[in-house]
Length: 584
Ligand code: FAD
Image 1 (cartoon, rainbow, N blue to C red):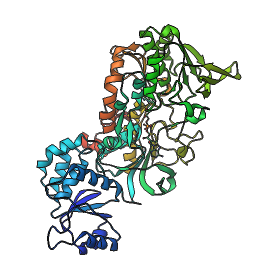
Image 2: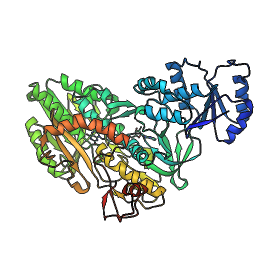
Image 3: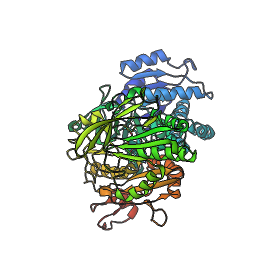
Image 4: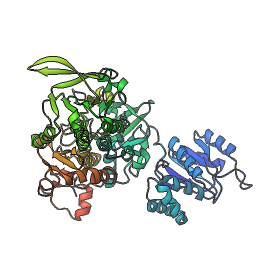
């Protein structure tokens, strides 16, 4: 037996014998995979004998035989699926280890670079250069990559709850800084969504497929994906409990489970969504229905609703409205359609600087603004919507007919956050607005929509929060105080017409934080350049930069303190730190 470690959770070996299992168990392996067909050679123990030996040592054993030089794509898929379900660390073997190494390499191609795979193989003594072309081909087949599950009950450096925008951006930023970090992402979904694109799907600009990727294909390299949901938190024990009861321990916890969409809080809504002219861009499957309704509406009344704050992307309800109106105007139908914007709040947009530009479009499209109108029930078949209305301090209800109804649902923190010891009094994940550290548990961090921080709940906010979380997690793992600070940046590209956007960018207290100088792009006005940013630049910025730890225009400001090891390395000398500055 000659074992070679390829990754923390995967090793390969030449042929093993029944007497090797005690050693393998003592070395911490949990699963042994036999890739060699039985009876290839006379002196070879068969799978039955090997399985019995494994069982005696409490190890799991799987036989997945493949013929030397004839590994098929189906073999690779089967191996990848096996790795997804078994407990690691895993040892796979064949006669020399080459077949196991080949299977692993091809199964990892969607998530590791060809160079990294060939480099790992070469370091273990396997020359797989002749696989280069096949690895490249395999890279474009998302969804087959896999990492063995993390060992049960071990303590991970970082556990991240949620594989959405916040969870994956934080994981990528952490691993960019410290590639050897043991990072587990707990995420139940098979797919990851670029939700900012749903407005464009509802406006007929994007296909919904442009907003969906397999979760496996967007997991940052080096992350262990725990395909499950967190049910509860035990922060005093540094542990999270998964839905199947498994406990995972951490040194640092990052919580990013997003926001809960409370469709059921509006009577009759769930039953009629996707039918009777009732739609919402807040769901991947319904955004195409919005565009279907917009195209087919010839006259009547279109109602767009906005619930009480906070919601994710506060501009999304009116973005849906503007793009719809723009289409009706271009088709010469707008005169026959009454458009109502029914907003539970009191203003069109929370940051006053952007309101004049939006009001111009409200006027242009002839939209009736109805403030203090909170949707409470929908009757799909009757095509009526009922609102709770507050007028002169008096509460009343009003019911309107509609031909098309676009609903933005009421929102709250997810239930398992609300009932956890991590919640603030309003149910949100409590964090310091600046360091994003939990006020009571210094090794717990949060980012994204579930947080209590009073920023605009957007993916743009996440882009700036992830590097702050990464810096501060590493600081506390090194026993230092967090010192990266978040300025509350968030952004809302308001698609006021097809081809123009009001690009709102602001931080805490509504302070304008434009990324570009106003002579290049004035965010308070509707601009073509901002449409280009929204449609062409932001999707690749999200997938290729943010989810990969490339922090373009997103380096966090650092408070004074000891330099991080990264800073020392890049400075090459122990220079004094200026008062507040960008991380290197
Ligand atoms: P999400 O990205 O929603 O991810 C949360 C993840 O946590 C999910 O994958 C979920 O499966 C997982 N999860 C949930 N519960 C658990 C659990 N118990 N255990 C483990 N995992 C769990 N932002 C912008 O910047 N610009 C825009 O133009 C914009 N437009 C938008 C338009 C629409 C219609 C919508 C819906 C959103 C828009 N956003 C926009 C907002 C943006 O998408 C969110 O703010 C962002 O996705 C928040 O990231 P997050 O990680 O907090 O949550």
